[in-house]
Image 1 (cartoon, one colour):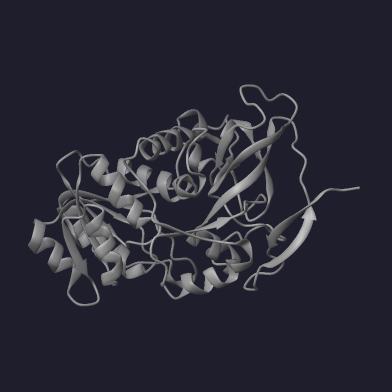
Image 2 (spheres, rainbow, N blue to C red):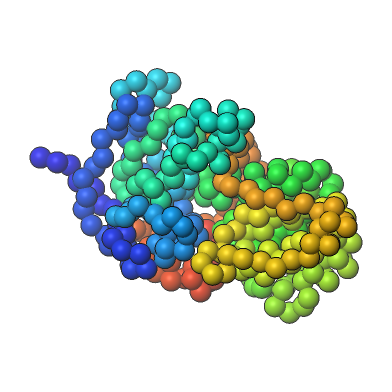
Length: 344
């Protein structure tokens, strides 16, 4: 008799997930079978469900890539792990390990990479399989619900901040104080940076202030670019976690000469284009960098910040049955912090 598990499954793009029973997967060579405790709901999951990106996800799909749980079975050839170990599964499911990008420590842009909850089944389920080489180790006594968002929102914003090259004492502007942005504020502070926060929600800006942001700008009430330039003389760095294309255009104009912006948020669809000033970028030697999730080393470092108490996601937990309601909230921009699915 085949063992089954509860999972939220996408059968067609732009349709609600269906809660159903599906077979429990078996770990292959080098894999772990993990019993899911918690799975964060990321905006990328919504992009996957709505078919915003090319290529689209593999259908049928179990979304979810901020997974915390415990190992219940080891595949052949696995060493260094034991049943019962506390682990986290990020977006990066695997990479080839042999291409020029993997060999240069840039496995995030490996052309053969697989993605949890996009090309491979994710964590909106009671169990999932993941390659042992790509999971993160979590402290045995760590809170899985608090750590789940660190496995994507955390590592992604941490890497983005690193890619700006900003140094302690310099200003970084975080555009978008949502699931990623409120965590980005904390990583920036822990890295010694001064933070300006930009959003269109006073509630989210209040959260940013409570987490250490010194300058708050509501883009719905004022000219955000002028405000940042006036208040701090322009930003040494900027990180865009928002999904509105306008934020990406504004971020460049918020920089001071020699500044760098890292793009993290992904608008998707027709909004995935911007207009900017080539002369401004050239004359002021500005830099625009993409930042795609994080490497395994980035993941380990991001987890260390969190488990040392320097970064903590603001979360709300729900059961799996509520996932479609969470997506509706996300579409309306009503979520403050991060929603985490409780799979217990």
